[in-house]
Length: 252
Length: 252
Image 1 (cartoon, rainbow over the protein chains, first blue to last red):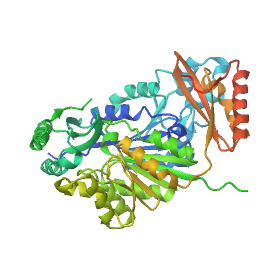
Image 2 (spheres, chains in turn purple, orange):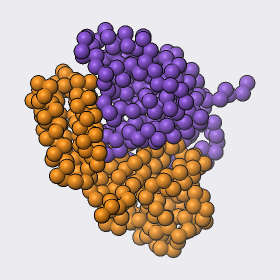
Image 3 (tube, rainbow over the protein chains, first blue to last red):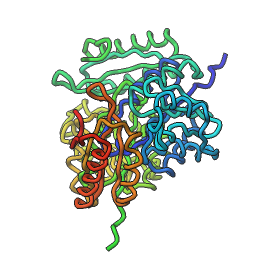
Image 4 (spheres, rainbow over the protein chains, first blue to last red):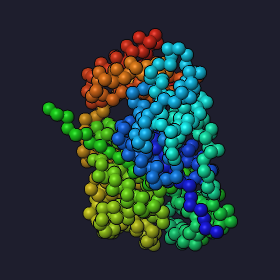
């Protein structure tokens, strides 16, 4: 039976604060791990500024190439929050205020507190499905294969937890890690040969500097458990053949 | 006198380990701050996997649009280190082994230790200029407006420190931050009006959750110190007009 086409994903982070170095992104690692556990392959991350044409171009480039696109950031009430109208433009649809979205905000903000700025958070591309925000009410939304989430990590995570059961999954990718204080250059030839023996797996080599020494973490990833075990044995054998004792897992 | 065109930059991070969530990127924040101090505007970040066609496409897209492109990762000796030949392909030039690069490695690795895998680290696109690596010898390189750096943070930083005096600078961007425990929705209207008064500055609004409360950090950025001070005073006045005392800087 042929392997079904993998479900792929991209993340689009919208915000000048990441580009200026003011804020360290905290959403990519969370989404990458969650999507990996669902068998969805993360294939690209982009960070773009709060500029409409940049957001439109990135949304359209990514939604054509990947099964799923997740955006984070730029959906608040201020002048620099332009993700929602930009996504409407990318899809060529109107930017509308569904009564259901306004009703959500009206439960949270009473009277004059529901001002025009906050009502922008109830304005979404026509045809979008709202994504629940259990933390601070203002919803995210889905249109086509694009999921528009908040940038604040606690809110982004809550939104993702609510929608993840609806995502199309794939076969989850597992991994095995074997580490060594050998340098990458010493193991490169044997590692390349091992990769050739297991073309269905992906073998990665990640240099590190810990305990005052350079070393290498070798990570094999794939969907077939039996092959992963064999390849991990192959990694241990390769390290022993070079006179070192392999270390299972990461070196802390 | 018209403002000269700003010097812009993009970062291209090459590596499956960031996409899988295995590794948290540690290079973006460093480069963003260093470039900001040199007056270079960071305009895009992309993360792509260790796949040749993806690297080639990203290098070519970014080097056309931005003044400078910095890549990190994928220049080691193993089979998944394909940045250097991919950059050669992007520029349509041969992948060559300059004697100067081999000589560098020969100072570090003696006899059989300078194996074929390590010699790959002395192989660069034809016409490239080597970038010094004071940590572990294997050089980075520059070709055209693309700077190819290591992915290991300590090595990337050392490479960058060596080359930064040769980078074309711009007028450094400064910033002022004023924080408040008001929500974004309460200040959005006044903030938009302030942005309209200072079109030459960029005013950003960043929600946070600290000390058990939601609040907002307001950051104004620009190259003109006098305008920055006036805009920061405007931010303080806006917060006071809403009945709160402004907090200079970030809320820890």
